[in-house]
Image (cartoon, rainbow, N blue to C red; front, side, top):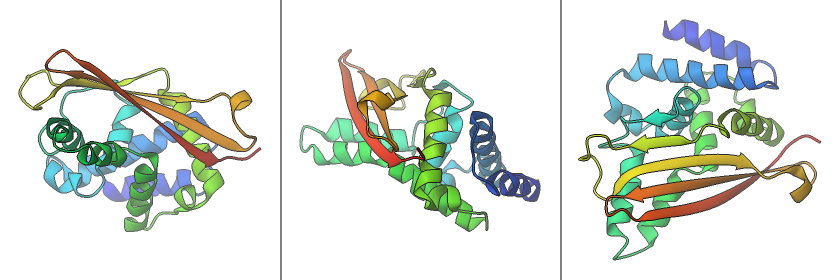
Length: 203
């Protein structure tokens, strides 16, 4: 089964990705491979491709309830709990979710499985992949919910929203993405944090 998935991934990566459907297919197949290889062993997976897994999940889910103990989201919750002592852990926790982290984990995944890495190595191909990905998820915010009210110390829920800044406000050949975290804390305080990311795309 794993070999079949790798062959499918090799096929979609053999040419430049140009359609939203190809992006969805790529991330779904990566997700299927991670499920097959790691199964329920999330402890092993979280040390390998935790951010890649989250972005794979986003193309098929808009609400996640299993990002609890040991997940990358828990690192954000721990940083919120520790921010009275220092803001550094909070910044580092948000940085984990950066698109550069996604790019690095995607490249590592492809290299580990002897797959073409052009989509992560080539700046224009990476920019195009990201542009198409944002088109797919921009209308579907990703919401993490602690339904059992016991997994997180400070967070009740977290919502991640992506959108692209229109070309009229950016430079030609440049993609600018904005992502915003909307956090609902257990003391009923709402927090937001926004970040921007720029990369090259073809004119």
